[in-house]
Length: 110
Image (cartoon, rainbow, N blue to C red):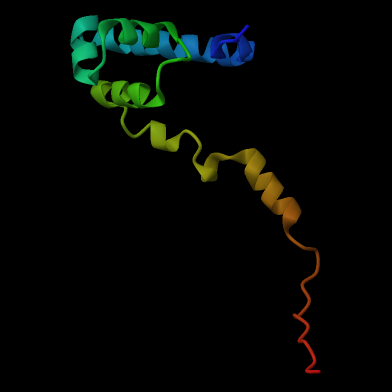
């Protein structure tokens, strides 16, 4: 039996997607946009947009990106994994810095 992506996702990821969908739905309502209007602006079917608002993991990332754009959050997606805010990555970089630096050895001709 083939498993779906929703079945293999960790619970934290599923909750995050559900919250993201709910936040998009709230932003849409604050802007007085209907589901149909959003679907048209995103260029997707109404059913696909409703999946997005429910946090369905099968919805393409491009659809989420377009929803951010339509709602005025187009800069947010580019900053999600900004290296300047990657604390774990910065710590790993610090651990990789050598304690001593030696000049490179030159190969002797044969």
